[in-house]
Length: 462
Ligand code: SF4
Image (cartoon, rainbow, N blue to C red; front, top):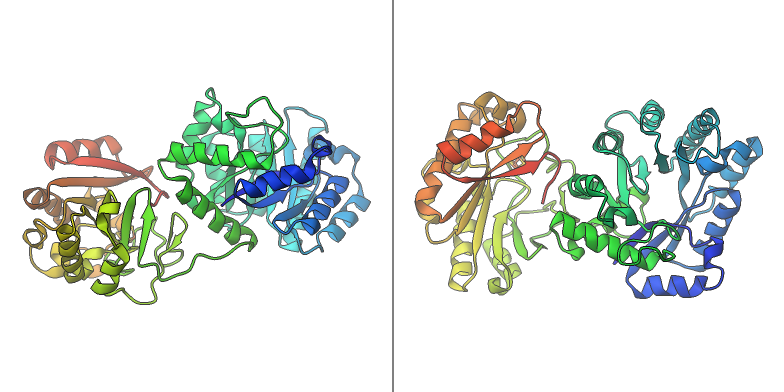
């Protein structure tokens, strides 16, 4: 089930077939539609739709095109509209210096006033930004300091990577509409690839901006499926992975839908099955949210207790259904070496493939070389090396004090030793860290350690 986080089904373009359009959305698997108000009249119409259809929610706000005509009475009306239980966000609001239907200074004044009211009412905001990057960042940063959470959505994102990164820092989600599917928008597609899954949305902005293959026709909420499929392909995940993630994002931002249940023993991403062995770890990496928000691709990995080998094995079923079964967790799996060995043996006997995702501390944790014990049980291993020097490793991965004594070199030894016992060995590096030289990492893993490497962007898990 997918969510259209931005539609205007109340507009005239749907006068002839509004109910059929909404029905088509429902039948095509749209779970919720957020119908967005642009002025008082359209906000009222959005509320009417939300009262008529259970799966439609509304926003109320004034589009930057229309702010030249508003006054204090408009704010009183907005305040009243926001008492409705299905009005879950403020907007759309923002700055549009492309069409310039309202003077810039008036747009900025009313952007600020609407944000102030939204904060007073504790509502997330829906931001429209066109050709106004610097001013948008300036205004928003006055209200949403770095580290803010659940601030709102940058709708129909069309900016550059800097705007996306600033938005993420200020607690915004990034929503992509039809234009991301257009061939010429390669820069936008590159940005859509690197938005963390827990901050990503898709929308239609109906009736405008139909995605490929509906481009040129009136847009409607059912078409969000095309944009979502495009985003899933672009990011190398399945549509189910993307839908699950966005549903959870919608719940986290607006409280609508359902929370992902904790205690997940195994979970599927693409066609791999991941086993959630533990939440304990010997590192506290700066980018890791295993304690604060242990969520990966819409799965809540918070464990109430660690699953037994039997529970793990029972959750696998027939391992041949998957490309591979991965021993991981939002923690270090080799803390549970016996469970890995017991379950991996069963998976191999049943004809499955296995992988171990590890921080490479296994030999230090278990006080022996564990790799001969994994021979024949593990087909591939991916080790998080994460840095090009011991100093950078300690800064990024923050090992437990008892592990600090040259643990980086032990991780490299683990990688080199793995090659003797495990057919496929890969090192992964977290990119976009100021203290890591990516080309040095590539050189080191390939030339010195003789293994493949995979760059994993800071903030991208799963
Ligand atoms: S090694 Fe993995 S699980 Fe442990 S803190 Fe780092 S990212 Fe999190």
